[in-house]
Image (cartoon, rainbow, N blue to C red; front, side, top):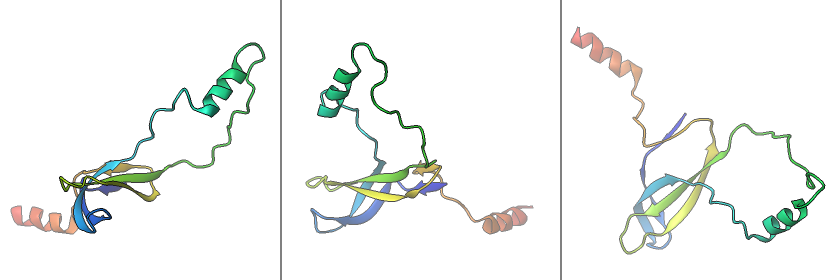
Length: 112
């Protein structure tokens, strides 16, 4: 499981120095109904004749690559950039930090 903090201090191209950035997960936008390929596909599909184009059914990957969207928090800048990280099944943004089990055990023993 990957846990990423909601803010990250990293280089901003516009400011030219390291600045704090707000981190969010990139999401694909809604597909346009008026893109050339979609119009062509809809035209071909209309009328009689069933499915005209092949439907892909041999998916190989079980995960997607996580893409982070970094936004500079500087009020005059607000520039955004993408940062791809590796594949993972579980992704968490700003979750609780993992604590070392060894340290917790000593705290429990001292409490008893």
